[in-house]
Length: 163
Image 1 (tube, rainbow, N blue to C red):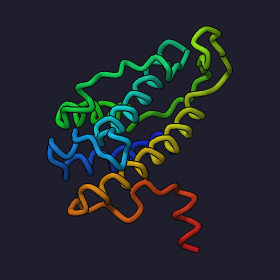
Image 2 (tube, rainbow, N blue to C red):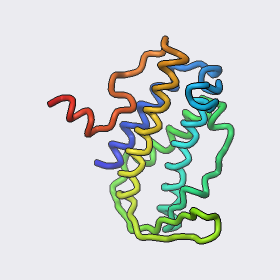
Image 3 (cartoon, rainbow, N blue to C red):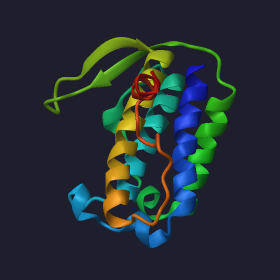
Image 4 (cartoon, rainbow, N blue to C red):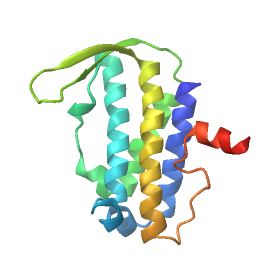
Protein backbone atom coordinates (compact mmCIF):
# COMPACT_ATOMS: atom_id res chain seq x y z
CA UNK A 1 0.00 0.00 0.00
CA UNK A 2 2.71 2.53 0.90
CA UNK A 3 4.68 2.16 -2.33
CA UNK A 4 1.43 2.51 -4.30
CA UNK A 5 0.58 5.73 -2.47
CA UNK A 6 4.04 7.06 -3.29
CA UNK A 7 3.44 6.10 -6.93
CA UNK A 8 0.12 7.95 -6.82
CA UNK A 9 1.75 11.14 -5.54
CA UNK A 10 4.65 10.90 -8.01
CA UNK A 11 2.18 10.31 -10.85
CA UNK A 12 0.52 13.63 -9.98
CA UNK A 13 3.93 15.20 -10.46
CA UNK A 14 4.60 13.48 -13.80
CA UNK A 15 1.15 14.53 -15.03
CA UNK A 16 1.97 18.14 -14.14
CA UNK A 17 5.31 18.04 -15.96
CA UNK A 18 3.46 16.93 -19.07
CA UNK A 19 1.38 20.12 -18.94
CA UNK A 20 4.31 22.51 -18.56
CA UNK A 21 6.70 23.98 -21.08
CA UNK A 22 10.45 23.80 -20.58
CA UNK A 23 10.54 27.53 -19.92
CA UNK A 24 7.83 27.32 -17.25
CA UNK A 25 9.62 24.39 -15.62
CA UNK A 26 12.97 26.13 -15.20
CA UNK A 27 11.91 29.76 -14.75
CA UNK A 28 12.84 31.30 -11.36
CA UNK A 29 9.64 32.49 -9.68
CA UNK A 30 9.50 35.42 -7.25
CA UNK A 31 6.67 33.64 -5.41
CA UNK A 32 9.11 30.80 -4.69
CA UNK A 33 12.00 33.05 -3.59
CA UNK A 34 13.46 32.86 -7.10
CA UNK A 35 13.44 29.07 -7.13
CA UNK A 36 11.92 27.25 -10.08
CA UNK A 37 9.36 24.47 -10.24
CA UNK A 38 12.24 22.34 -11.50
CA UNK A 39 14.26 22.99 -8.36
CA UNK A 40 11.40 21.73 -6.19
CA UNK A 41 10.97 18.71 -8.44
CA UNK A 42 14.69 17.94 -8.20
CA UNK A 43 14.43 18.07 -4.42
CA UNK A 44 11.55 15.59 -4.43
CA UNK A 45 13.25 13.24 -6.90
CA UNK A 46 16.53 13.20 -5.03
CA UNK A 47 14.88 12.22 -1.76
CA UNK A 48 13.43 9.17 -3.49
CA UNK A 49 16.82 8.39 -5.01
CA UNK A 50 18.39 8.57 -1.54
CA UNK A 51 15.82 6.17 -0.11
CA UNK A 52 16.22 3.64 -2.93
CA UNK A 53 20.01 3.84 -2.61
CA UNK A 54 19.67 3.50 1.18
CA UNK A 55 17.58 0.36 0.78
CA UNK A 56 20.59 -1.28 -0.85
CA UNK A 57 23.27 0.09 1.49
CA UNK A 58 21.19 -0.09 4.68
CA UNK A 59 21.64 3.62 5.47
CA UNK A 60 19.48 6.49 4.21
CA UNK A 61 21.08 9.93 4.22
CA UNK A 62 19.00 12.67 2.63
CA UNK A 63 21.86 15.15 3.16
CA UNK A 64 23.97 13.29 0.60
CA UNK A 65 21.80 14.11 -2.40
CA UNK A 66 23.48 14.32 -5.78
CA UNK A 67 21.82 17.69 -6.59
CA UNK A 68 21.90 17.02 -10.32
CA UNK A 69 21.08 20.27 -12.13
CA UNK A 70 19.75 18.39 -15.17
CA UNK A 71 16.72 17.32 -13.11
CA UNK A 72 15.76 20.93 -12.47
CA UNK A 73 16.25 22.09 -16.07
CA UNK A 74 15.35 19.16 -18.34
CA UNK A 75 11.73 18.00 -18.04
CA UNK A 76 12.20 15.02 -20.34
CA UNK A 77 15.17 13.72 -18.39
CA UNK A 78 13.23 14.25 -15.17
CA UNK A 79 10.24 12.33 -16.53
CA UNK A 80 12.59 9.43 -17.29
CA UNK A 81 14.04 9.53 -13.78
CA UNK A 82 10.55 9.72 -12.24
CA UNK A 83 9.45 6.83 -14.47
CA UNK A 84 12.33 4.71 -13.18
CA UNK A 85 11.45 5.52 -9.55
CA UNK A 86 7.76 4.78 -10.16
CA UNK A 87 8.72 1.55 -11.89
CA UNK A 88 10.77 0.41 -8.89
CA UNK A 89 8.02 1.31 -6.41
CA UNK A 90 5.11 -0.13 -8.40
CA UNK A 91 5.71 -3.73 -7.37
CA UNK A 92 7.60 -3.12 -4.12
CA UNK A 93 6.43 -5.18 -1.19
CA UNK A 94 9.26 -5.77 1.24
CA UNK A 95 9.94 -3.54 4.22
CA UNK A 96 13.44 -3.46 5.65
CA UNK A 97 15.10 -2.10 8.77
CA UNK A 98 17.39 0.79 7.85
CA UNK A 99 19.52 3.40 9.54
CA UNK A 100 18.75 7.10 8.99
CA UNK A 101 21.85 9.32 9.03
CA UNK A 102 21.94 13.10 9.20
CA UNK A 103 24.10 15.94 10.46
CA UNK A 104 22.93 19.35 11.60
CA UNK A 105 26.31 20.89 12.34
CA UNK A 106 28.19 19.37 9.42
CA UNK A 107 30.40 17.39 11.73
CA UNK A 108 28.56 15.02 14.05
CA UNK A 109 26.71 12.30 12.15
CA UNK A 110 23.54 11.26 13.93
CA UNK A 111 22.21 7.79 13.16
CA UNK A 112 18.90 6.34 14.22
CA UNK A 113 16.85 3.27 13.36
CA UNK A 114 14.11 3.55 10.77
CA UNK A 115 12.57 1.35 8.12
CA UNK A 116 11.90 1.53 4.42
CA UNK A 117 8.15 1.79 5.05
CA UNK A 118 8.62 4.55 7.63
CA UNK A 119 10.65 6.53 5.11
CA UNK A 120 7.98 5.94 2.45
CA UNK A 121 5.47 7.57 4.83
CA UNK A 122 7.85 10.49 5.26
CA UNK A 123 8.33 10.85 1.51
CA UNK A 124 4.58 10.94 0.88
CA UNK A 125 4.25 13.89 3.25
CA UNK A 126 7.46 15.53 2.02
CA UNK A 127 6.34 15.26 -1.61
CA UNK A 128 2.86 16.60 -0.90
CA UNK A 129 4.42 19.54 0.97
CA UNK A 130 6.53 20.42 -2.07
CA UNK A 131 3.58 19.90 -4.42
CA UNK A 132 1.70 22.49 -2.34
CA UNK A 133 4.60 24.93 -2.78
CA UNK A 134 4.69 24.17 -6.52
CA UNK A 135 0.93 24.80 -6.67
CA UNK A 136 1.42 28.28 -5.17
CA UNK A 137 4.02 29.10 -7.81
CA UNK A 138 1.86 27.75 -10.61
CA UNK A 139 -1.28 29.58 -9.49
CA UNK A 140 0.60 32.87 -9.34
CA UNK A 141 2.92 32.60 -12.35
CA UNK A 142 1.11 30.20 -14.70
CA UNK A 143 -2.63 30.26 -13.92
CA UNK A 144 -3.34 28.76 -17.35
CA UNK A 145 -1.95 25.40 -16.24
CA UNK A 146 -4.80 23.30 -14.89
CA UNK A 147 -4.02 21.61 -11.61
CA UNK A 148 -6.23 18.94 -10.03
CA UNK A 149 -8.16 20.15 -6.99
CA UNK A 150 -6.32 17.89 -4.54
CA UNK A 151 -2.81 18.50 -5.95
CA UNK A 152 -0.55 19.26 -3.00
CA UNK A 153 -3.22 18.47 -0.41
CA UNK A 154 -2.53 15.95 2.35
CA UNK A 155 -4.59 12.77 2.35
CA UNK A 156 -5.84 13.54 5.87
CA UNK A 157 -7.04 16.98 4.71
CA UNK A 158 -8.86 15.46 1.74
CA UNK A 159 -10.63 12.99 4.05
CA UNK A 160 -11.49 15.77 6.51
CA UNK A 161 -13.01 17.91 3.75
CA UNK A 162 -15.07 14.98 2.49
CA UNK A 163 -16.80 14.57 5.88
